[in-house]
Length: 144
Length: 113
Image 1 (cartoon, rainbow over the protein chains, first blue to last red):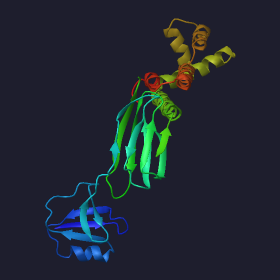
Image 2 (spheres, chains in turn red, blue):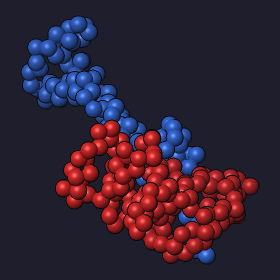
Image 3 (cartoon, one colour):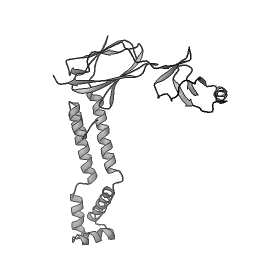
Image 4 (tube, rainbow over the protein chains, first blue to last red):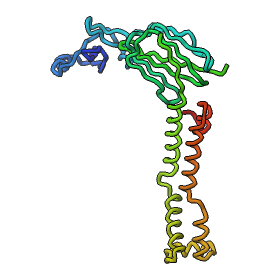
């Protein structure tokens, strides 16, 4: 049986244990005050970051992809722009380049972002919003 | 729609400076050569101030077929490894301040950032 221990507020999975001698294990988890669900139809372990527990229905669900569209992954430095649409509201936005975090907005209060890069380099844009899977794209600015 | 235009250079310059400082810190950490050269400079300065050198200093001067005074002069005429490295570090940090592209910064630090 698969025992999935999750955070009661977010549904984030703290631990997923495949237990082949499950008798009494549920009581042990209850005694420790942990929130968990049990599944006997899943034969593999869950990949870290792949799933979550819906705290209302107690269903084990795959974290959805963000419905973000991007018009351009390569732009002209100082001229073009990349437009992200469909960003979930109040997401955390991080813009990084060459090992440095250039900008961070938490929460990002819009569902659209237009990004311009003044000189040739690659920006890595990361958008995080629970329970979506993290979204990450690289935008390369090149000389025109 | 939120529009963002970011100049990456200020933050990436900081990353490049950290990289240079790490490179020099690693290079000079526990450096036997650096430590003994610094010690020899101390003794050479004492010799020039009219004090007696250590027996090892005299023996090394003999090995090199130099007088103690000549040996002390040669040691003091050389810029110390540490001074030389510090000059190089400052030169690289200054180049980072002047760089206008990320490619220039990569060249200065000798690799990817």
